[in-house]
Length: 166
Image (cartoon, rainbow, N blue to C red):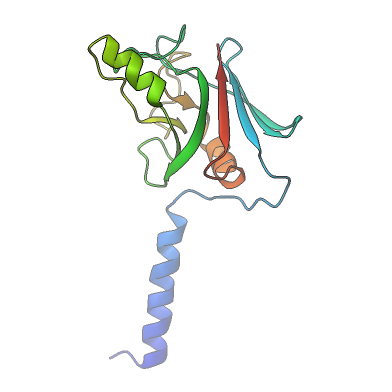
């Protein structure tokens, strides 16, 4: 039989073992990320504090990267101003930060075409299984390495603007 001390130690060990299996989010106490900038043509993403670049990353985009996302399944990464509006710690792509696509204009343009604008656009990692894929392989998301998405996760707050340029 466990005594109370043994029970508490066993519970703590089980709790800590669960922590080791998830992504390691590094602490961040630097300048606030005030904006994310993505330049699709250059395949680059920048974390900005006002006009200062804090970090930069090479990115993979949707499998049809030219032009603005219009409808579900077109393989394009959206262009314009959006916001980080959610997080998925249990993402199939390691970690993911949601982008507020579609906005009202995107929905209206897709509706005019008689189609759905799609959704579920994220900044995400590769989750190992997606390493070595072609240059642009996502369904419209912005992909960086798993280690990089852990860094972005810790630096970027919900509500941060993301400007995606052609």
